[in-house]
Amino acid sequence: FARAMRADATKAENILWQVLRNRQLEGLKFKRQVPLDGYILDFVCFEARLIVEVDGGQHSESERDAGRDRHFAMKGFRTLRFWNDEVVRNIDGVCLTILAEVRKGSSQANPLSCDF
Image (cartoon, rainbow, N blue to C red; front, side, top):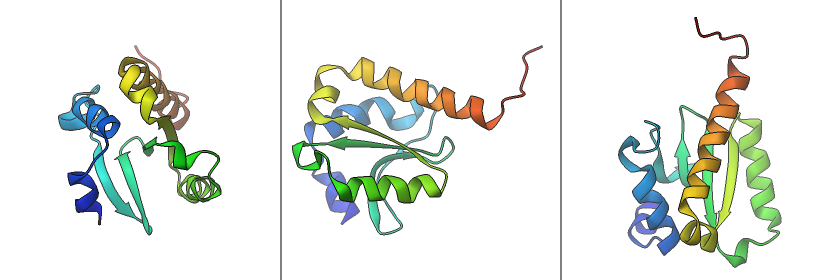
């Protein structure tokens, strides 16, 4: 099913994938349409423990999505959700938000690091 979803990605997913693939975003390794724990994640960066979901209107206030986010939060993942039109209209802003979340997570993971 995940393979079929990769082949039939939405326009927004394709736009975001062009930015995330091949470590193009600050060297972060993202995978797309990854099956994990009975869910299929749109994009995931395991090293940053970050899941990125690109949603259409059917996800508006979805309790299923909220439960899924809680499930992965208990496993140490953070989830970012973007609307399809947000990705299409503002890919730069989406990428900046992703990078800010990665940086926030890495500073929390090692709060005592210093640059000498």
